[in-house]
Image 1 (tube, rainbow, N blue to C red):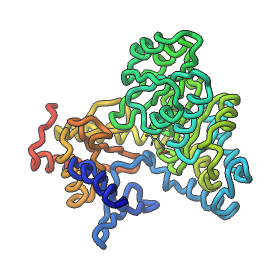
Image 2: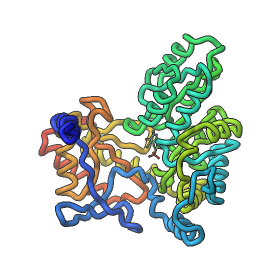
Image 3: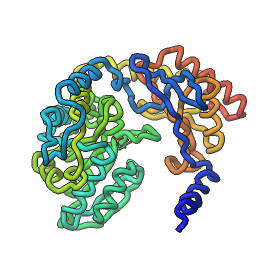
Length: 404
Ligand SMILES: *Cc1c(COP(=O)(O)O)cnc(C)c1O
């Protein structure tokens, strides 16, 4: 059997359709966020990263680096086992306490990543609750979709951010059917935000459990940075709040928070929690230090908001079309896959600006875009350089401008 030929045949259409993924190889420079060195053709280039999910630069924060160095010196590198078999380190327990407190819940459970937390939690809830039907927002992340599929629970997909459509679908099932409503707060491609209170109203009406992915919001919104549900004062209305330690928290890992019973249930039945090595204690110590900092420090959040607003107004001044939304995510719309890739190549090669093109299937065809995430550390000069570059390229590629 010629397996190489099989792989080749499957890869060819990706190249033909412009969907083949090319990774930029970079080395981030601690202390110089958002600057990095790009490795290309045997040489290097200085670049400014404009598409990082390290939204606040916490991945290079001295406090967090110190906490991780100290934890390695204290405990070593790995955890030494699964949570059940010698892997539960003191740092994991401290982090879970920190997370539960952050979201106002009894308990928390750490997973290897946000992806695994969604996959394992939804997979377990959907399969271990007999007769459960999961109601999933149409734009939910792949990790939720895979978890729901894996659970083999009944599934209904409601129109994105549409509580009325959710109500209509929930109404198809009697009160005896266990129901779970799964959605996100900030959606990462359009940067729009779910009407969480309305969704909770509908879920309550039907006695459904609520599961909220706050991956793109934790660290960034709310007085203690716990996310949109905290900002709206409705964390208590959500049964499961899920998040990542890999984006604004700046480290790696994922988690869920909820009642003692719920966390005990996932802990006891989720294969993706039980049969895998616990995260290194140093990661847990770093994440805990980051969260402790973000609970009390408003500086990063305020500066990020100011930077995002300034960047949007600079784009407006040049007529560069961007999607209006109430979040920190600034999608600059191109609307053509080839042009989107071409623009991002030119920005990198000629201007030292790194932004990954976002094409189908991540977003619908015709809405291809460059997704910018301004951070507290992007300077006026960084933004001026980027906006001038975009303006040059907009003229060069004859792209249409927004009318002010
Ligand atoms: C990135 C992402 C995840 C996965 O989190 P990781 O920690 O990166 O695995 C989950 N949900 C959403 C909405 C995401 O964008």
